[in-house]
Image (cartoon, rainbow over all chains, first blue to last red; front, side, top):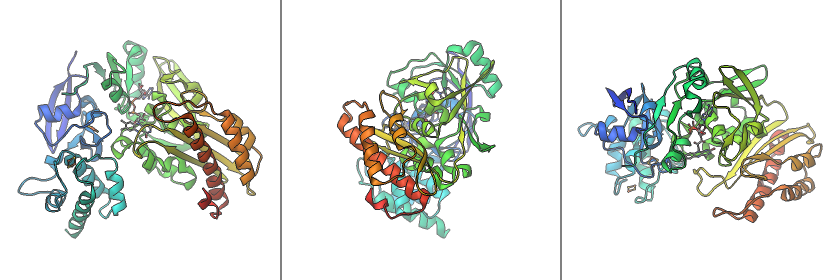
Length: 158
Length: 301
Ligand SMILES: Cc1cc2nc3c(=O)[nH]c(=O)nc-3n(C[C@H](O)[C@H](O)[C@H](O)COP(=O)(O)OP(=O)(O)OC[C@H]3O[C@@H](n4cnc5c(N)ncnc54)[C@H](O)[C@@H]3O)c2cc1C
Ligand code: FES
Ligand code: FES
């Protein structure tokens, strides 16, 4: 199959890659760019585990072709904070023990980030609606809601 | 690990380029918009296309405008675009507003397109009943010109449309809603944010100031077959009547005799029929209350 030349901006860094038509964004991120926060659950758009931001909007990287992300800006968990300088969501998820096995968390934090970018003061109800679309088999969601609301408070006070 | 089979993909950057490709080499290519229907199907092995034409970069197909009392929606418009459009912000476009709670997930709504919903041609596609209820027209473009079809002329059977290989679904349009008109959508599935509607009803009503139904269109996800259709006989029964409890009961009986639902592993036909009747009752009461401004009977539902 002919290869395609694709330009992606991932967490602020430009990449130029040659990909096959069937290559999924999740595979490009994990296998070529070594971005391992992006996790695969269902592979069919149902669970939210693979969520990344494309031009600031949450999307499922398991059902997005890399060829279709050409020219777009992709943000993953690695792009919103670093160990010495974490994003408030990364702080509150750790401090409030909102994660257990952690598998679902990168997807949830990316959706939460996008929610807070749009709405710095969401209600608990709005956060729960966002979470209704992400499967977590461990936490029971309660602390995740608290962690998102707490991060919103920190961001507003900055 | 869970890669897709490889295929050829061509990504035209303009409508002209797309139409030329479809006219020539790309006649048998499978169109991919944002892939939220197609890619899961390829993964599940239901489809094995060799060649895709990626229309997601054809920017000319993403718009919502109003011209001469007609709302026009480009095929690449997403569900999130519909929800955010000021042209559809009036409460009488409620059918579109409820989608932000009932259609897929946030991630899916950011990607799922209007053209892809029609192109997927299944009873799980929520925009098909909504556009049927709005009596929408679908514009197909090819190098040779255009065809304008009703939704039921486009979606002819489960997973089958009447689109020719050299055509692309370019636009959906319907008359803007005005005084006395109301659109509504209801759906029930197994999980709130899940794809498959067990039962859904998109409704359009136009009422006179004293509550007589001047026009009505009711499109369920299933009526007789496995694609969304209108409940013509129920509509006919309702036309020119005033919505009261007696008329509602009468309409439910007509609907029950009109529906030819079947049972499957998701739900029995009895359950589906019962829910369809409840949706009909709610659509009539709700639209009446919203149009006439009274809210006293909302609680009855
Ligand atoms: C988790 C999940 C939840 C979902 N929930 C819902 C839901 O609640 N309600 C619902 O209705 N759907 C739902 N869907 C299905 C899907 O999101 C919709 O069908 C969506 O509108 C498809 O748009 P798309 O751009 O992704 O289409 P694609 O997948 O790109 O295409 C779908 C089909 O349409 C054809 N096509 C696309 N665009 C055109 C065009 N312009 N001209 C001609 N043919 C075209 C393609 O060839 C293909 O056959 C869900 C999907 C997932 C994965
Ligand atoms: S892995 Fe992408 S949504 Fe589940
Ligand atoms: S923390 Fe384990 S799945 Fe969510």
